Length: 407
Image 1 (cartoon, rainbow, N blue to C red):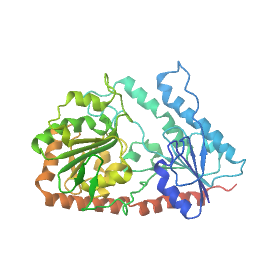
Image 2 (cartoon, rainbow, N blue to C red):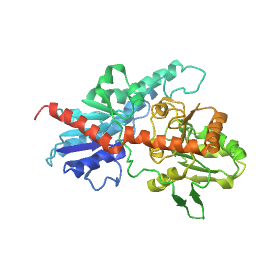
Image 3 (cartoon, helix red, strand yellow):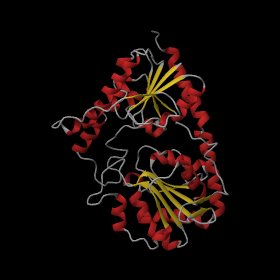
């Protein structure tokens, strides 16, 4: 069989599935605009993002205009495949950037699965999260218009895939029957506890389970992932536990939400606002290789994961698979995975004092921490194990292939 995976940042969410299919002897290719993508040696079909949208368009049209920058080049690149000749039996594409918009116009009879990661809501999700004021009409209208690419992609695909129940739930009711919930999967064989792990860095820093280590890791240091809340907790953690080591992983950029006003990064802004009692015991890493991040999860005593009601990060599940005890925000994406006091601890996203209190619980009761660690690991193995998720994804694909029209 021939499978085409479309993702501007390949391999994205498709790495494990594509690798498995290729290993079974299928002809697997990526369509992407990413240069030199790490796709395990699989063939890559490149495309270039289109020109910037013209000036003067209505700002509410920016999402659709941006989507067309991806959609048209992707469709043109897909159409060129037939000259090889190479025609996929099934296409899977991420819906968020517009890449999936016109693929059915190129391959009308080829099944298309759209990766439905998120659907924006004026209420009940990230927009206005924590605000005492409801979104005004302008915010509501902008949010509704922001879904233009998502809606067109949902309409065009044959089936859609969402990684969690909550992420499916924010999509329109009219499309719920079209969406299946299957996570990409966690490699539990590799991401596993290692009580003897010692992590050494250049400069002499050495981390192990012999110390009390509090970790915070996110792709970008920004409020959407609770960086501001955590930074305000750091002085309180240090005053209660002067011997604690605090490790912060994340780049100085914004992936979601707004840039800070008057500062080049949220880290600079928070460092200007928060006085850290002992900076020598706060260790900053902008980026870590995955195997190093895994080791960090294996030695941590308390891993803090905070998020707006938004896309659930891989990092939280991977940390739990490594036996890390997560102190997470009581927000829907986290609550889908963590049951408070059973396989982790939950706290109000905005409550800095409560966050520190929950961390203190883990310091005070190592035996409880070990029980939570074991339960965290088991919950990932039982619900998100890679082999199980891949099997479910493949079953979805084969059901679609069996009912697809021929020719």
